[in-house]
Length: 486
Image 1 (cartoon, helix red, strand yellow):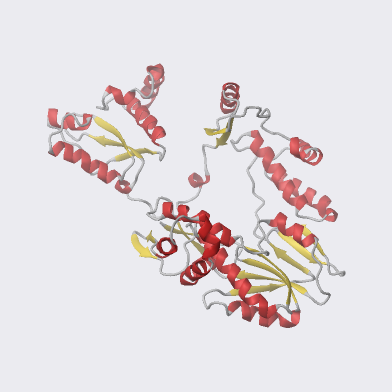
Image 2: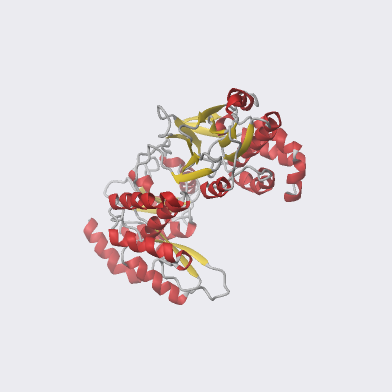
């Protein structure tokens, strides 16, 4: 399904089109091809992985006295990447890919073309196909876009050797130091690589330019100073202290904000940035004593700080990772008990309320019967019968409903409790209006949810074996819940 995310830092807030590739026909093939392309994508000297790496390079940089700083930004790179050009580059550099795949070249390229060109999506309940560019949402798109950008830079640099003294790239953003007399020629050369890939240019002002979340300052001695930078659209909203999250996550919020403010700035800015960090945190209701204590602990002994108080793992067994819904204070107590029995257990807490519950739905809604991984309810429509059937299915719901109908048509009384009820009592079921109770991609959770729903619906006609996943220990709880509901 296609949807758009607004670029709030851009004028007129244009939408960034996203096409989700999850569970699409090509998603598994895309994931299979991805590792084979990574060696080719990494074959350059100007890529930076993050702001911290960029700062380390800037510290050591010295440029000619007449050079200035500029930044180039590719306009909507992913959706403008020429796929034919990308496939041509991959074929040309097959020697880098060949050691990392068992597929022959022709099959690899055909598979890659299928993933890039045969993508379709639904928008406004209609099917469309993207005829050019790469879909944001496909795991192959970032790495293929990077391959094209690397070739672009390799192609234009030889003709601009006397104009550019340094260049760094982060995805579609470029930081360059250049001779200002050649600025028009530089932009024209970059934009001549391919008609679909075009750049906008920004020059330094007062010897300063913003790149990523840093502000780079050109000194009079041709070296650079740097400071932590936030865009004008930055709201200052973080994980609120009063939100229902574990304390260690809030402590990590303080640490990470302070870490960026300090490590992305020259020591001369540390005092001002520390004040700024405290202001942001106080505005999110963080207690000043916790802010000061956390900053002090991070400054004095950051490697040994352990907000979860997890003992060092002396067990040679690999760690086991598990997610647990956070309900204060029960979840912390459960986690402590579990770690006593399973020393190599590592628990990640997830909140009950997530962002997708708080914001409007930006994707086209899926029709009820086209949903998958569901726990559903079917109601008997015969007068004076309030029976219902609870079921679960991984497949599309309309396929599962059709299977129920065929069981009844073929008089399979032993297939499910639903068909037995209809055929024994000559009742009717409303297949046109199923109720979806829950959705869980995980099969075990889905079975557990099905059993729970059967317990919560005393009028269900399911077999007793369908209830057995949840033991009779909880019967009194279900009785209490049912009384409150009914």
